[in-house]
Length: 29
Image 1 (spheres, rainbow, N blue to C red):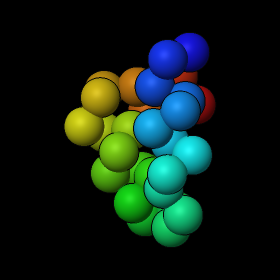
Image 2: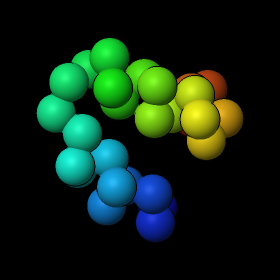
Image 3: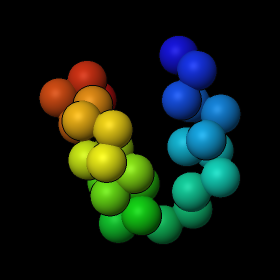
Image 4: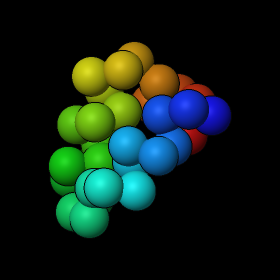
């Protein structure tokens, strides 16, 4: 998935969740 490259930039779990929420893909994880 293309957005995975952006997730690699996220180190904190909280930031990751916010990142996922912003893309509405939380259910995809």
